[in-house]
Image 1: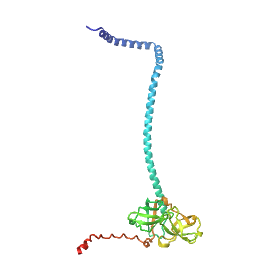
Image 2: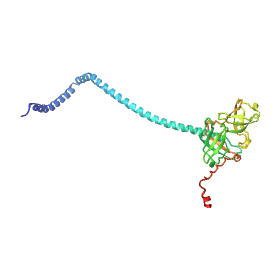
Image 3: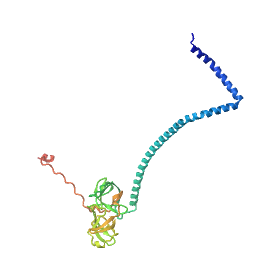
Image 4: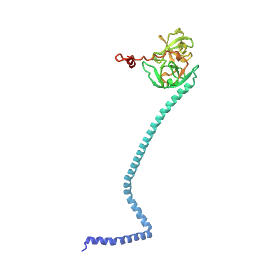
Length: 297
């Protein structure tokens, strides 16, 4: 026995397709017959549905705008990361370019001078600076393998820097003219007054033992005198900048606090300097005689 609900459902399934076909055919016929009526009906339905469609479109539009904004923020973040990385690389290259520019400027300054009566000269780079309150020395990246020796003069393109005091095979120590232990015989060109340029670890060394200090004027040029056989005469040192009671102060031509490269010049005078004393051999222990002495016994 078939249930009523199942019979009803079967009846509906049989009759629905024919009814839909008939309704479609009727609509088509009516649409062809009276186009104006259907256009009016369609317009009315569109007007009635417009508020609902507008209300539904607002959340969708807001969601679409939000997605676009999030996508834009992600793009901006990625671009910011990329630009930050590029900026770091550019800053590194900028530091390299600035260093190369400074080195090029120093080397061009050295090329402008041709040492007179020089046996040889070596361009060396400053690799360490021990400047402080008590020591004014620097280390250069050249040594005896490049022909350097104690006492050789170091200059820049503008003036005297100092002299070598310690020389190794690949490095050497340079005593600056401002160091407390520096003593250089000089002459004031305008007045021809001989003096000694004495460093005291300040920025401006002092003229001591001047024959006639009252003849020295501010602005006078100071050069090496050649006395003592350490430096040849005529090397530019600096200019008199101040007249102190203890002795005139000299402003060096070379910027000693910003040295990059120096020219170490051999004038053939280093051979006359006293050489460092050799290290004394350790005495043998008394408790046990040497092997050769024991064999003799």
